[in-house]
Length: 262
Ligand code: FBP
Image (cartoon, rainbow, N blue to C red; front, side, top):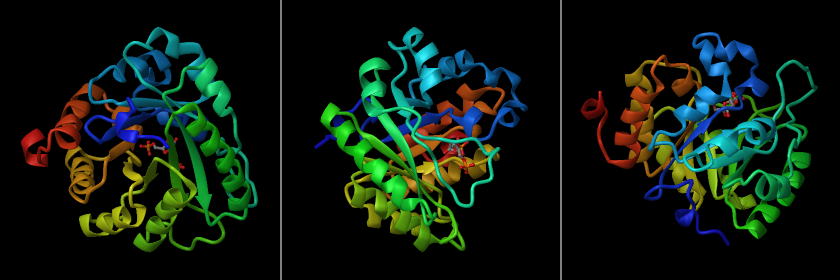
């Protein structure tokens, strides 16, 4: 059993996970708006902000950079991930790093794993997740599930019922935190939170939007009983990432409203 509230990746029960695995998942296109964001050192520096409770990266970036930042940046190793260059018959995300390697060699404070509920390969990913979850808990580190309904079995991945179902799978399979898409309203987020019980819920960021639009979804998530967010592009694609992190700190950890922080 993990007490997630004792983990360094939470602060007063909430989390702000800065996700930076986009070079694998989407490729260089995600770094075009802010070219310096292609440099992991830039994003590790951003992650030094007090609001960031963990930086989520793939093994290679953890291995080459984290030791220079380990005093200031908590590490979440994203264990699986894939490029979007291939065209599989359905969604699958291979394991690129073991829990043992992440914890013992890389010093991970947490691990992350994507599960595509609704894919033809959901069974394989669930079996891998079983090994990941058990190994992580044996090491005393929490598991964050990127709970993405996606694949042939999913007609509309934006429906609240589908998002809740994928998030619920996170509770059922032993995640400490599930990361899911914002379902569109505070009321719908309350339903997701209700379905995940004692597993914490963080909102996924998505493509870059205005400060107000983005912060109001984050505020609704927290007001609905959610526990913060795991975000990439809405932070590192901004010219001044610390500006949005200051505002997020107010909303996620200090109970402030959107108008108050803008
Ligand atoms: P964003 O906030 O930029 O959406 O990042 C969250 C994240 O889950 C990343 O960890 C991942 O690289 C990306 O989204 C995957 O997005 P998708 O699978 O929707 O293309």
